Image 1 (spheres, rainbow, N blue to C red):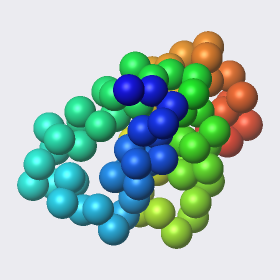
Image 2 (cartoon, rainbow, N blue to C red):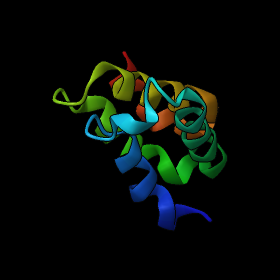
Image 3 (cartoon, rainbow, N blue to C red):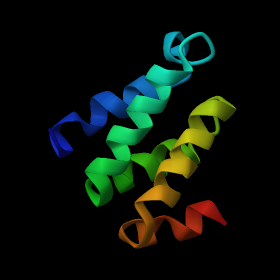
Amino acid sequence: MGPVVVPTLIEVLRDENKSLQGENDRAFGLVTEVLVEIGPAAVSALVEKLADRDADWPTREASAYVLGEIGPGAQEAVPALI
């Protein structure tokens, strides 16, 4: 696994994929954990999702959380988080 799966995982965080939100919070959490493990390779896609004003709040919140968990490897995301 790695950067190849990032677009698919980001798609799972989208607001249309509510099947992983609410009823199955553990699955949603697993997706965020995998993105954290992928690390800096996921940053640009997460920043894009964070900036998407059409995305629902849980999606944007999850993106911000993952960026924070990536830590220094996500430094380019700082302006989007402020």
